[in-house]
Length: 443
Ligand SMILES: O=C(O)C1=C[C@@H](OP(=O)(O)O)[C@@H](O)[C@H](O)C1
Ligand SMILES: C=C(OP(=O)(O)O)C(=O)O
Image (cartoon, rainbow, N blue to C red):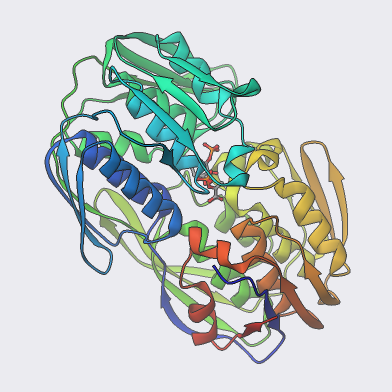
């Protein structure tokens, strides 16, 4: 990892056609389900980011054979289950990796010790450990369920679990544990979250029953996994990541004269809240070439420089864009009027406290931001912000990329520390942006 910072500078229009990197959520899941399944799983378009590579190593440690066959092309020989690892499982920076793997591992009668980098060791794991403990798993670790911790699984009982927070990671951990629980599991979602685990379980041959029940004004989703599901290896084509596509697309919207197309972006509506919001702000975003790929809709998205206006983002949209608020806040800094983002308390427990760091980064760049306990408001003036700051990222890839995009259209360059962390989700970010014409240099 480079210790130098990275700096972006305002320059000419951004133009070109690029491919979105593979979706991180689906990439993790393809490794984990491939290892749990019996037989061969082949993956194309895998995101070879640090988070997913940590999950690949973990799957090897649990007994699967995992091999890279070419760029983005991987083969996993699953053993139909996990065997006890002989060393600590280090999930690096990945909340998705460790939470889903703990869920999967809980199904087997063995001990596994998990850790991660300093950011991951600070993130709450109780949200996964609580339902797993109710199913009969035990764990030993620090107060509040922070990593490192040791989990002992096996002989799980079924569970009917209402998610206390909108979290696809918690839902997925319960479903994966449920593969080996007597009576199966049911997860009840007060707010629907990304459904990649459900879709992929089906693709591997499991029965997953999803029912939407209307209760008053709300629709509550019930996801049931009956007991004794068998997974069989399959082929997974990983679609492009909308969370990564967001960066070049917002750059296209805020840099004058730009036209940027990102091809092959997944359009699952539980992931595309950002694009809906940007359109409400007046963004010229056009989706073309809609098609299906491995059970997910994908399309090409073109962004042209646009005059944006502030909006109130409906809080119920948060699960469909939870990782995209930092880059939305950058777009909001160029918009005229207030952009109100509420109901996003979950942002505080990501790789960093993303509400605090987005607000601090924008303020350092001359933008007026109001922070609230569970949200924030960006007061845009319709003019490019001043920029001219070095932004602290606390090792958060999305905070780093967001502020580098800001620097491409601000009045003065913007630098970020720890740019190496960008490789957790978007290893080719700097080169891809340079290919579009952006000015990015070591700082
Ligand atoms: O399930 C997933 O792949 C993810 C779920 C989200 O986390 P939560 O489940 O904590 O909301 C998201 O922030 C993360 O980047 C990926
Ligand atoms: C929150 C994120 O990932 P994770 O929870 O997997 O670390 C993210 O990629 O923005």
